[in-house]
Amino acid sequence: MSITLKTTTKLGGTASRVTVGKVAHGLMTMTHHVSDAHPDEQLFEAIKAGVDALPPGTKMVLNSAEFYGPPHDPLANLAMLSRFYEANPEYVDKTFLMVKGAMTLTATGPRSDSSMEGLRKSVNACSGALRGTKKIDAFQPARIDHTRSIEEAVRNMVVLKEEGKFEHIGLSECKAETLRRAHAVHPLAVVEIEVSIWSYEEETRKVIATASELGVVVTGYSPLGHGFLTGQIKSLDDIPADDWRRRLVRVNEYFDQNMVSISAIRAIADRKGIQPSQLAIAWVAHLGPHVLPLPGMSSKKRTLENLAGGDAVLTEDELKDIAEVMEKYPVQGHRYFGDDEAVGLWG
Image 1 (cartoon, rainbow, N blue to C red):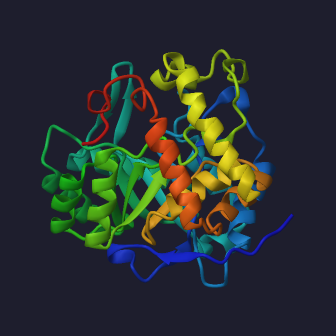
Image 2: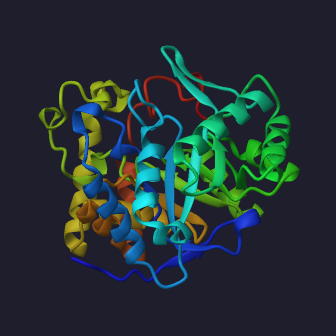
Image 3: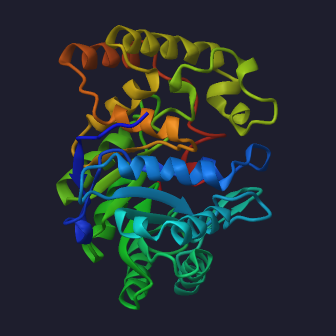
């Protein structure tokens, strides 16, 4: 199976001349779970398939992080990328690498450190894992550091950027107000937030609108609702007992209620003749030329299927049908394990 994608867009801020595919490639699922490890050959094939489907001169946005490996090897994702670029050097200039860092995952939740020392340590660790195979294109603190101002955090990143550690600056999980303040210090290329039919909160809409005003691209992670909007999960038995998603409030408390909306979305996709995952990605893509769906993909088949969602055009009637589902069956429960702000989201 091979496809040729049509829809492209530009990045923002200092990367505004970079043309990229409309759908970005999230790499977390490639290395995050020890029990579901994938061979390099499969992962490399998944990355190359997406890049090869793009028009000439277009880059694929790859999204990695300092912590996308298992607890004993958090840098595993970047190490995998170093092996990919080492084996496929011709893909270095065909990809735009976004890396999140400056965050430690603790038992009480994520802990961010955007001090000069914290950022430098993180960036050096990420670059070290890449082993010189590719320079980081855009670096993003994974969460907002509430112990210092966003202005200080951005000024610290500017120092590292000017030292040549990376090319562009981004943010992740921030409020619209934070985005505006950060961008005033130095133009941002990208802001990463969760965006999906299941996650379209008021603050999400504000960030998307503010990013459009400022000329910043939004990468919307989990456009498939952590896999639930694919239509492949029909009962709790479809989720392994040790799967972290069972801890989600939307699953362990409101599974039956939320499955009603999923069934309705699947019916719309069936009428259109596409996969529910493609419908979900197309919906995120329709939010604006500056909004890039960011699904996680670990196989060639899934990569090509999801990327094709970015080319799917939703009619006014289909958008209306989806809006009616969202209004009639609003998703129940917080995004993760408690109040979003309490677990470090929306900084």
